[in-house]
Length: 64
Image (tube, rainbow, N blue to C red):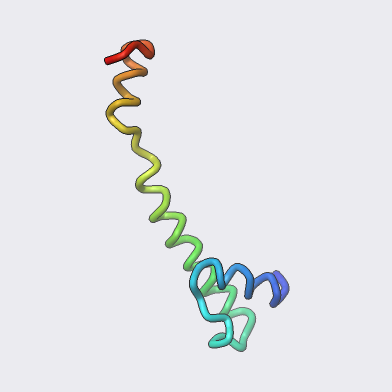
């Protein structure tokens, strides 16, 4: 289990108020959940290539 200091640092990064979670296990659960949510949100926009990138790959990099 990570230290409380580390949990508080990560909690701040995912916008969780660590002071409202006196129990380290509950804080860790909340931080883990928020990290998964943020990762899912960040991953949706970056998994699709823009149309210009797709076109350049198909055309061998030539101007399209």
